[in-house]
Length: 351
Ligand code: OKP
Ligand code: ZN
Image (cartoon, rainbow, N blue to C red; front, side):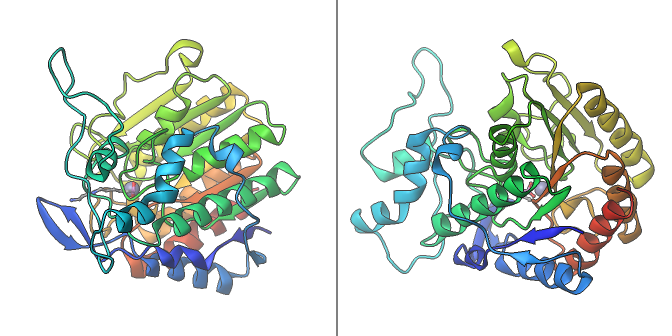
């Protein structure tokens, strides 16, 4: 049995276009993604589908800076107050305090909204619109509710989050992500009594935000399998030599894999990731479940088949830990149903 937490408010974040390959293209991180997965888990009858409880802002501010959360919450109001087009569906930052150095740009919270958008973002690929905060905060509350269920004794729960979260930094949005749902789930488990939590990220893209949030902590072990950032987004984090800092030294593990990776090689890397999590002695597990490792994903280059997702779920289930599964990426929209159901079926069959 696995209950699913879901909020219809995800659809309030409804981007039309995104910046990719140097131009505006149709957005891929769209409401229909979550609707497809919702229908699939309903038909599969894994367990009840429930609404999230209210947002625990205190927990969110344990992984994000309060001023960043305040920026997200107030963004659309500020947009309107700045006299900008109220009918626009998608807004984009275009200047960043990114190139530092002795006489370089300074990281300053400006009065002007363009400066703030650059201050609180790290890419131009993440449209923000009028309903983004409502959807992102609902997504975070979905993760919190699922984690509370597991902290309270349920063996597993599925947080059907949208928008995704694993790229969201302590104080910056990017990669279609605003609040880091997986990090929020991990923090909720910690607050609920788990001493050691592992976050295993199997999304095609490196979970740079989750890594950054926990990089100097030894109570949350971040482990990620992903496309080598020498070749793939998010490029500037996710390399194999990033192992943690300070107290967190040794509590970050990146396993970059080449584009084109098939299940056979993927499963081998996953086995070593799971062995490291077992050695860590986790009390609970958060899985960042990106279904964009599918062979026909439109923006990704791994080669997992429908059947391989059953094997993925089986290996994750066999870890035999209290587990919060958090939905992340996956853009082959019509294949999300079968890939989600196969993963969760494989998982539940191996508990
Ligand atoms: C979010 B998640 C492709 C552009 C890619 C960013 C991808 C964000 C992925 N030409 N843009 O990890 O699935
Ligand atoms: Zn991804």
